Length: 571
Picture 1 (cartoon, rainbow, N blue to C red):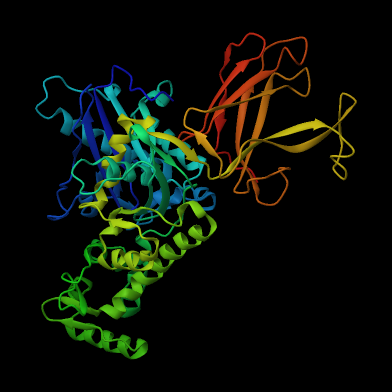
Picture 2 (cartoon, helix red, strand yellow):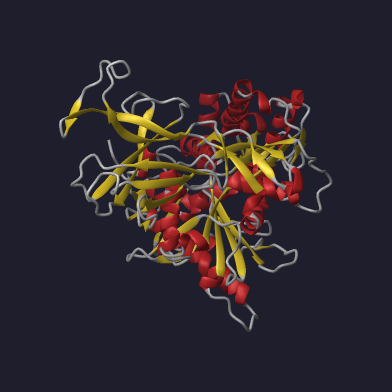
């Protein structure tokens, strides 16, 4: 992908599509320094609604009705949340239908993401064109969508397909008009290049990024290079333990507290959603000063929304306290009073996973044991106790720990910076090994014990890994790796190349443990009288946020239209 923005593009729009909250930013493309504008005030979310809820209501036809805080009040349609996490791994991704929060209606995850992107397309263009006599058309927008760095290739391909279906770009110009940006990478760019910062990352220094969002925790490490460039020096790591798992712990607590008298309809109601919103706000803003009396956390709650009275609630609280040796209270001001010791049980399991994940990686990788900076970005980085824990647990590294003023906006702002200057990232360290499943002539010494297959009378061995790149390898963003492939049979008109991947750096056979099918590359073969005449040259680029493939005919060097599909479900 070219690092230059096409000349017909007038505006760059970055969409931070998050698990629990989402937002967008934009910049007018000029030759001079550009200003980044962030939509940081969303109606319906109170005074601190820097992003809107990733909540969508869908009508019976499967189309967008409302989004964000508005969707929460849409009692006449199906409401969906947390659907982004369905893309996290292949096991959940294959369950294509997602059940609504408030009814039995279902929708595919792709349709939900597509309708979400349609909302941001419409909303961002309306704001950009407000008062603008020369309206910006969708084709004049350079789009950037953020994705977790730990996502696999299938999830990224689905995101690109949804963007095409949402009208952000077309199949013909999607590589030109749409860039996928890694969330921690974007946040790092915002932290490093924001001019108002009171710190300076010097050439040669390393930066460790904690990106703690709603669904995932992403960690990456960068080295500052000369000329304002940065290099990824370890493969991204992390897991599906974002802050929504604290919400799940709180929900379990509330269900136990309220008991069996609270029906599923009550749990699916907008009142219960509002209660969860109260916890979301309390969870993020926690600090010594925000903890009410310093020893407890207050959650606004009125039992009458469930047709219960205060006496009933106090009985339930007393029963819970006895069973759990707790000290929950209810104030007649309309608040549940949860002691900090109890409140932290909702958060501490996630805190432990975050710290353990990073410390384990530090033990395995010498280059990140002593980072110069630790940047904490993402909405959950606003949590005071998480900040204090990170400072305590990583003080031994000597790193300067930085939390931006509005860490939940670092990703969307940085994605704008990345879209304007994607060449700032010079190299990335690969998470996985990628290999093509090939066949080779049987060699007794090398292939002893492997099954032979006769093709035109010649013995072959199947399932050989022809590795393009290896896990942990540092690859330039424009670096191209090339292989030449021949058909096994002269009669073939199509070459189907199976691509396998692994977290292992050294792989030999596609049938070995730890190696899995990743994609299929379909290549129409040119006519020819020999296998050499029908051979093709396959070039792959692994250093970008996505894998890009180019195929040319060996004899004529003419480009061959080939398609790579990472979303095939193959056992």
